Length: 147
Image 1 (cartoon, rainbow, N blue to C red):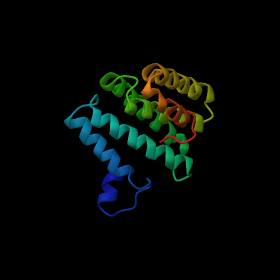
Image 2: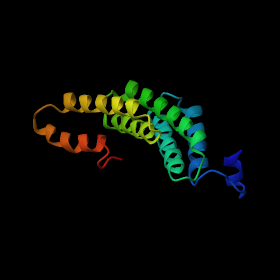
Image 3: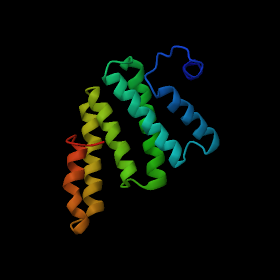
Image 4: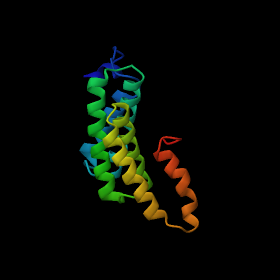
């Protein structure tokens, strides 16, 4: 168990933070359930770290990318149900999933998600005062400065 090895001071093959996020996800899932906002946040964060490690060459992308995709999709589903599709946390997870797919040259899937996000942002922000942020959010979705 990599988490146990890390706690025991042994060598872990996982990047820093992964064992801790896995343990946090396990705790969240057991205590508050899989469809809770905290569990969705933890899934998103673990997926983000796995994707970054794979892109950076610190872990094997053939195992990290599928795990990250599963975590992002589960987080996205929970956030859509709990928060709604246009909530900023839901949009961030959708964007993260699109970036992961793009990193795997799955551009058609990634662009479909990006289009959905831009459509959501356009409908949720409208043309009023709040619409002033739409350009910034659209640039983030397109990869010009997102999270």
